Image 1 (cartoon, one colour):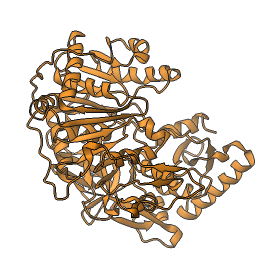
Image 2 (cartoon, one colour; image 1 turned 120 degrees about the horizontal axis):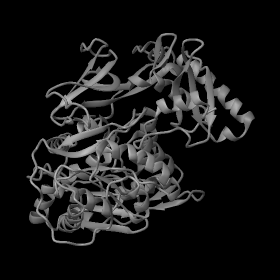
Image 3 (cartoon, helix red, strand yellow; image 1 turned 30 degrees about the horizontal axis):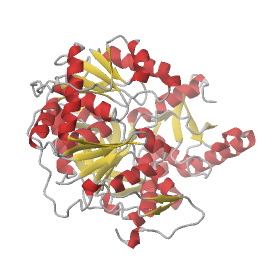
Image 4 (cartoon, helix red, strand yellow; image 1 turned 45 degrees about the horizontal axis):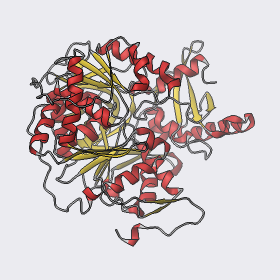
Length: 583
């Protein structure tokens, strides 16, 4: 670790002292390492059995919890824990092909239940647990919809949630699971269901995506090749495991390639974003994914601290996805973390979805993210990609890169015809990792294209996203993209960064939608400050986009609803405005 990575102390700021590097990771990663080798197995359970037999002392996962400290799980340790969970599942009547709901936070118990379900050939789906007892009723309502869709044979949870979970109907298994004889993994067919992944659900009830064992293996293979995964790599992060970027990206795909991961509960990051960075430092993490907002929060946290000894030079791949990537955030991030060893070429914007297991496109390795600067007003009002008229009209669009192996992406017009470069259309995908289908719906035809619902365009072979089709605001028959409006709305200093939603609210009198912009700010408390900020937001949006909002609402920070991956739930925001819940 060199002195250039240690900024001079600032006496007026709190000091963040980086922890010691974990003993397992001293001297790693090694330059010039060979590609990571996939485990020769046809399921996650079979991969666990193989690693426990042939690589028993290899580290599978480090689980870092502020309350319980660090837990180091070798492949043999994990096999014993998962075996106990598998025995409990079988005793509860869970068999091959049965769904099982796992309602646990990131923990050793969740990993035991996940791998244990795979050992018995069951089909797990992960459910976010409530943070407090006061939230049990809300959790029960949301989870009941998932249980109704997936009909699990059992629900797995911790002791504090057991009584509430019992009201869902299926038998409840309470972790931890103890010890038991380790069962052999149940043989599975490649096309049999392996996981049920509930999509983020930005507007309505989440859909249940069914991934086969083949899909999971193909998705993990594509990620490993495109990243690429190298021997000695360590993946890590804080992402919730009920989200595909957390589950497939930081747990399943490295495990299937004889690699380890270091994971911590999402709340640890939410409470103190810099903990993500100290995790990466301690375990010399080489690959870590996160949504754009996480990079902004971590950069803001570090900017307010004096970070002593923090070394991120091992971080080779920083995947940035799950929401549109903001170029201003990338600049902010590099300014804050570049002095701590983070290379600008490590930032890898990406695109993916649960329906593909995870990944669709990655920015090419070893390059700076590609940025296309266009006219904000033309994009917002016409959906056109034109040069900016003035500096204030400039809007940066960040490329998501090129397709991962085994996947094809195309952009089509309203008639389903593929369009050329620099023409905005709907994004469609197909590939070997494609889901079997949505639970309760007919399976997808082999080789068929899936409409993602996203809008974007091709730029010199790379994919650039502009937003979601369902989020377009329709005013007087014209479509308007919300993202440039939201970026403009966040320019006033008192608006919380990244906390704006532009939505269309139907006006039955006019027969069209009214443009409503909702921003979060601490100024919500004082009527005079609220009015002044609303006026300022209206002025900036009008200047930047040539659209004048019909209404600007200033709300308490944390009010705007988001999915577990940080995406704005604009449809719900529109409903809340229409009902008067936001006023």
